Length: 72
Image 1 (cartoon, one colour):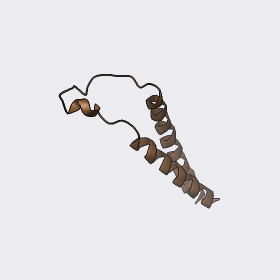
Image 2 (cartoon, helix red, strand yellow):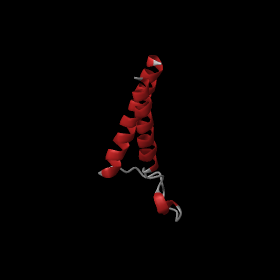
Image 3 (cartoon, helix red, strand yellow):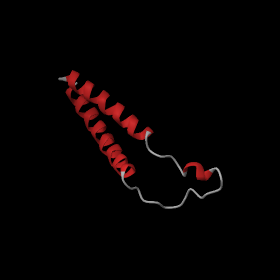
Image 4 (cartoon, one colour):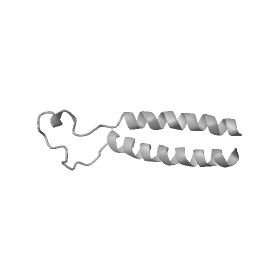
């Protein structure tokens, strides 16, 4: 049973790492040329889905880690 939790943790960890790396950082190239990066903008489309998926994967990772610790 522990083997399944370990495999699930590895898969979720890789997914979490990829979802964090794919997210846009800061204001992009506009920050180089003086554009304010504090401008509020909403997440739309893929960016919104990626943000929600990151949250879900983080919660799932923590839950799996706690369950794997209890099972051990």
